[in-house]
Length: 249
Length: 354
Image 1 (cartoon, each protein chain N blue to C red):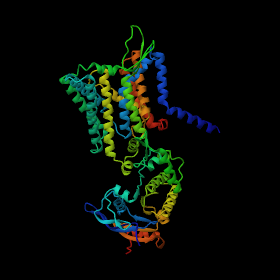
Image 2 (cartoon, helix red, strand yellow):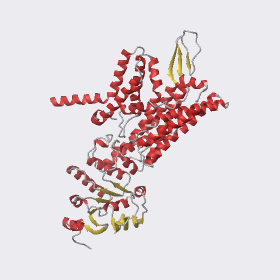
Image 3 (cartoon, rainbow over the protein chains, first blue to last red):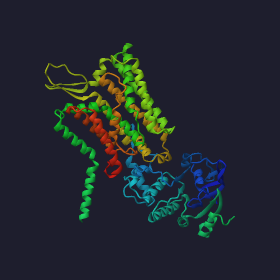
Image 4 (cartoon, helix red, strand yellow):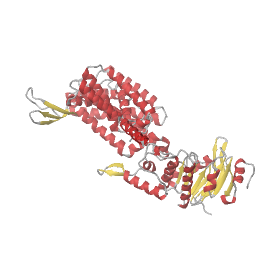
């Protein structure tokens, strides 16, 4: 089995504390892997190493079987690893297409030598990507501030997809959403899977995890304590692993 | 049905309310036209813009900084420093035998380059060393004030070449009543023949720069990143914008425009003065806020800011024509500034939407 993204013995220490301890796991194309664990289990630290926010203290990250040197977020983005943070990292005072193109704005030449923003291009490209992902937003010229939580999530995700994400890391994507919006986001995750992305999902919501994940990895005190195929496991087994009342080798 | 009609009416009132700055401007114009004799003349309007140049330029500078969520308190004394530095340089050059035009040109260019330094220091303090903008620029205010006083305590800059006055108080176009047009210099006419002076040079120069900076803010990547930083700094960083360097550029741009305001002051009054821009700080921040920008950052446009500056400049000239002392203006501007901030805070639906 060849993974699109894989870690081998990846480790992170903060002083004397080992936050992530020789963690190995992988995600294939078109697969959703959920990482579960109690607070402080090392989930966030793990994804921050993959997205380049924290440099790792040991171990290796492989992309398509080749070692990927990820020392900062730009390296991760260049590889095609995009992260959707809980706070979404959107500029609320800018409109939808400006957010999709944030930091990578398309410009055109005016009078032959002055670079100005190419609003039409960015608007049209954004319309295309939203349509491809079947996301409905009233007007792309509206400021993100006016959008619902689910729509904002959708904007953040479509930005990643537009910029060729191959691996998508989602940190608590449904945490701040209402029930209807949670469903929208989960539907979106399923459609991303069909587009061949490898998705790493961090969530506390057991229900979400069982709805979209193909595999469930459980972490405790920085270590992997379970790697389960969803269809072959139960909520009870997963909870037991999280709290540590039973060890599965 | 009735409630629908009522909501429509509220919507309309909100739409009108959002334009309160324009309504205020029109009210002001009507008020002074009635109350101040000689207000409704071409000349008075040119005077409004002539005295307004410093505020327009520094408000534009302040707008960029405020959009990023910061504030630049040093602009007034950076302007003062620039009046003195430019005056001293020009006097020194012309006394060393250089011709007037060249010494003025060289003096201005060197002053503009020196003018970037306070902004660069402000920007580095704010971005790299995480000093709050208020403290960094407030310290810079003191430093520039001190250096200015030091420079003039040795020897005041006097005897600027006559050409400086001709530029600073000259006009772009002169129209002779009997017919005939002249550019840049006042035509020789017989006594009693009326000459209309149109477009003061300093106003034209100021607005060329303001137009350029309006374009940069509204149409370019640089402007877009400025808004993004004010909207969500973390988002800007994560999307690959070099936020620290961008902030340095913003503060440099701010002190560049303040220096330009200083140079225009030097040309107008043919002298350098440490506190030349001291009172313009309040005016320029007020102009930005009246123009609908938020002190929390992320919003505002140059032309709206100029509208805010115009409200203040009209107030100043109108009161002056009415013979009311100018400190009354400071009180009024202070009250408007606080009111505008309160409107932004408690009635956000009344603030101007882009």
